[in-house]
Length: 292
Ligand code: ADP
Ligand code: MG
Image (cartoon, rainbow, N blue to C red; front, side, top):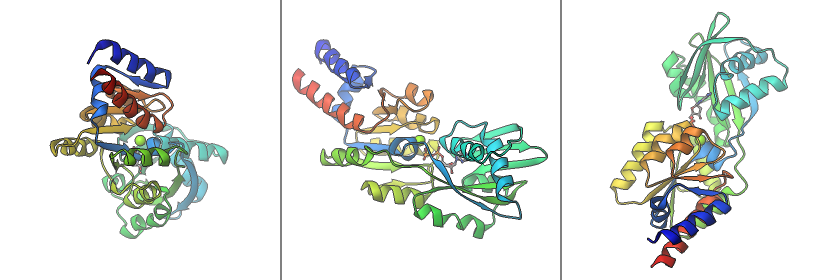
């Protein structure tokens, strides 16, 4: 490609909030036939709000939320923010958390007072020994409504469920439809649970979904698609998306996401809006057409 047209292309992108790192990225965008997409913070606002609290094992609601929020103060995850905000809204005093241990894609645990508090998904609960199957299954109800349900364990025993709802970005659905109309196959990969993932995918018209996916699995899935001959772009926002962004043909980070995601990607969408994926592919197609 001629350097001049490429510069014009990347310049036009920049004016529209699409930062393209280099000529290779702009060229590669033209050939993309598959978009792998993260859910939380990419399709959704990533600004979840606490919508329900379900204590277990004799603890009360305030104690449950205060303990969880004390731990989540140590996490950057959007879900953590929702829990801390929920506690603040209810004017709960947050204890001091020490010995924080965060497990990417699973959750976080810490010591609050004399108690060891863990919060996260089912994997996190199995890690700390809170394996009451009926309790774990009780999360399904909220999930079918598209909520993300997290478990809280205290000293390895079930202490409650916290449910958050994360609204879908207003532009997501139209962007997904536009990509599908352009012949791009959309695959959603998320660390969230199957029921939540399927509820969101159904609303978005996405028919291929994998849930409970670890950051390494996201990256593995991208590599598998590439090995099968697909030309894969990956759009994501989180630390958990960084390996997959790096493994894809074109990594696309939400500018509203974490620095690690942005550093791992070759395209950054300043506005963090999936319309930018449609625009960047259109820009690449137009630029490459110009060159030929
Ligand atoms: P996504 O792929 O949707 O962006 P992640 O991989 O970041 O999600 O997280 C997967 C799941 O792990 C979340 O849905 C949540 O259940 C749990 N999780 C991760 N981090 C935290 C945290 N700080 N607090 C509570 N739960 C967490
Ligand atoms: Mg995310």
